[in-house]
Length: 433
Ligand SMILES: Nc1ncnc2c1ncn2[C@@H]1O[C@H](COP(=O)(O)OP(=O)(O)OP(=O)(O)O)[C@@H](O)[C@H]1O
Ligand SMILES: [Mg+2]
Figure 1 (cartoon, rainbow, N blue to C red):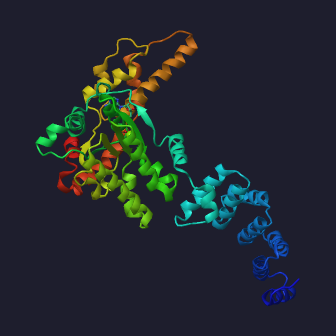
Figure 2 (tube, protein in one colour; figure 1 turned 180 degrees about the vertical axis):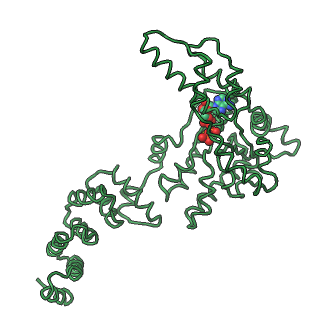
Figure 3 (tube, rainbow, N blue to C red; figure 1 turned 90 degrees about the vertical axis):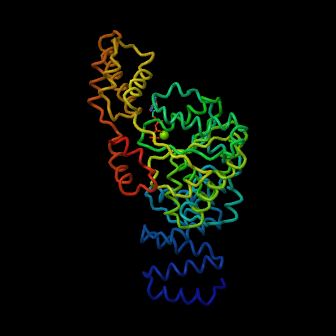
């Protein structure tokens, strides 16, 4: 064998201190570099034998395995470390490469996504070309993960209890312009832009967005921003473009962006350009819609409007911000009626239920009804007879379930009192009075 000077020197050194792991590691590295792979492997095995947690040696060993095409050995080693939650970045890369070589593209892609999450700027030609997610793959992914899906809306405004002012705003701001573009033009009124719904959880933001689509028989796309951001960080921008292009192919279409704050927050926390890019792209897509007025209705929702960058609120973007409060007494009555429709009931006093469920969200009311039904079901199973649900059962369930809107108002109140630029949160204060 012709070893380089370096290697010979290291071998000498190792002879005098055979327990010196750093020397052995360095030697293995040099051997590997110079193509003495088997010799390198031997030293690496020796290191790992004396120190089972020597990750650097394992990374090198993976490289040696890869050179000798022992892909399954890499996979076994990586999987073991993964199980212990201890997979170093370099080994993730070898792991992804080994999986690719073994033809397990699905797991390889998953690992690759993780690699990109760790390092957005990571590039590797062989991985890129084997795993680059084709456009249609992204679509499949999106659909599979339910973060985007095109739906026919099966509800309309009549299914939404109360919220009359919200329905009216939606009518004026997005439905009417779609139906009468000429009239708006005559008055020099700009069409386009989106509305942003905000408020406590479970009070019907998603529900009314979907009902808007049903109201005008438009398609409905529900996009969860945090899913889009999570999916393939490096490719988020393309995913977003994808969403808008599906929407354009399915006009008229209500595009609903849930958790818009996930974008707003990222502008502050993601200092890197990837985060900024996706926001800029999002804003550009919104701007494009206002100039084209092309039958896309944009509705956004957030529980934390104060986390949103003001750039989102400029004209033509989310320029109408609407508070979706917890249902009032009539709406609660309505929601109880809807929830109990087609259920076995007897003499329900809906007024009383509504009166006793102040601060309860629509989701809370559904939960209450579910609880009451479960109780009855248990009774029915024991007695073998259907026992109808009565008012007292529901009142009992109300007592057991605390309203979830209270915590939200405790936080929102502070913003409304101390950070209420241009009266943005006046509605919160008005509601709390
Ligand atoms: N005004 C309402 N009329 C009828 N049902 C309602 C109303 N508000 C809420 N609901 C019911 O409560 C459920 C939860 O509402 P929804 O998911 O729209 O809340 P949300 O405001 O989007 O909540 P989150 O902030 O958690 O996303 C709905 O599926 C619907 O069944
Ligand atoms: Mg929602």
